[in-house]
Length: 160
Image 1 (cartoon, helix red, strand yellow):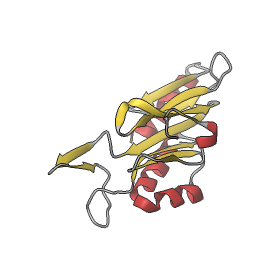
Image 2 (cartoon, rainbow, N blue to C red):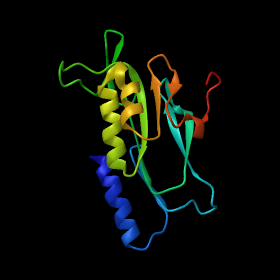
Image 3 (cartoon, helix red, strand yellow):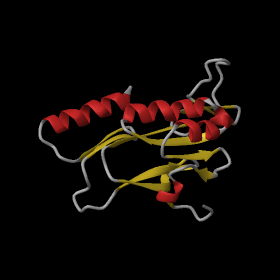
Image 4 (cartoon, helix red, strand yellow):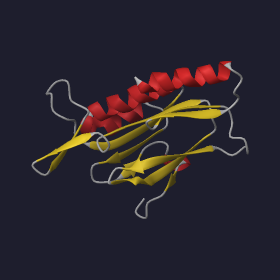
């Protein structure tokens, strides 16, 4: 689990005297310490339709984990349809409903678990997030952006 590895790498850096940093393992982040200039760390959330662009930017003070689960980086196309890599254990088919879920938690491992479970909940993932996760951002398959972290995130889209 790369989220756990990010947390362990951050702990190792701290144990060796580092006072701040961001460990990024494939977009899953373990952040520790304050940004040197005193401003919040800025973390971009990829636009599922074009992952080279940011859909939103989160602002975090430090000492947290951030993880994103989605259907747009690891997928396959079959007969003109995209299938994500997160599979519903009850059906064996890829989950549907949300394109991306980003969660901020105490650790990256916790954030990763929460974001993946939200994806597994499909269309009910939005309600699940509001009950079980702290700050979060979701993007549904229609491209709509939402979540509890939106008031503290800057939306980078024209339609948000």
